[in-house]
Image 1 (spheres, rainbow, N blue to C red):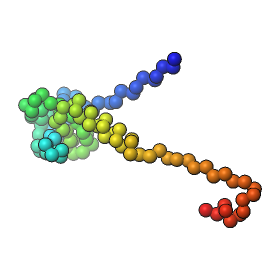
Image 2 (cartoon, helix red, strand yellow; image 1 turned 180 degrees about the horizontal axis):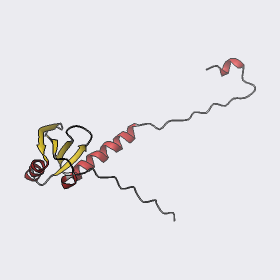
Image 3 (cartoon, rainbow, N blue to C red; image 1 turned 45 degrees about the vertical axis):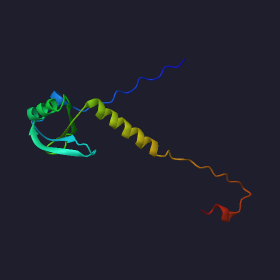
Image 4 (tube, rainbow, N blue to C red; image 1 turned 90 degrees about the horizontal axis):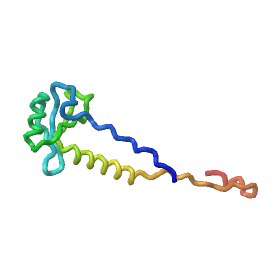
Amino acid sequence: GRRQPPKQAEAAPPMNAEIKFAEMRVSVPSKDGKDEALGIMSKQDALAKAKELGGLDLILLNASSDPPVCKIVDYSKYRYAQEKKRKEKAKNSKATEVKEVKMSYKIGGHDYAV
């Protein structure tokens, strides 16, 4: 049988100790599905808050903003939600369809005009 090519491992965002920034804007998910901002804090404070909230992970969402944006969530739940979003997006995007039109010498010139 044919072997499946190995699945590409998704690059995990930097989290917890891997984050290189000293200060960051931190948010946590709230009950209503929105994110609740905790404000700008140091890396140590953010990691302490993540541990305090039940051993959650500090995940870097946007490194290019000033200050960088991080979120305190359970990484496995975060990854599940991202995967779900990606699949939903893929399901909603329609593949481009190629339509064929048969042309022959018997067709009148005005029929070619589109």
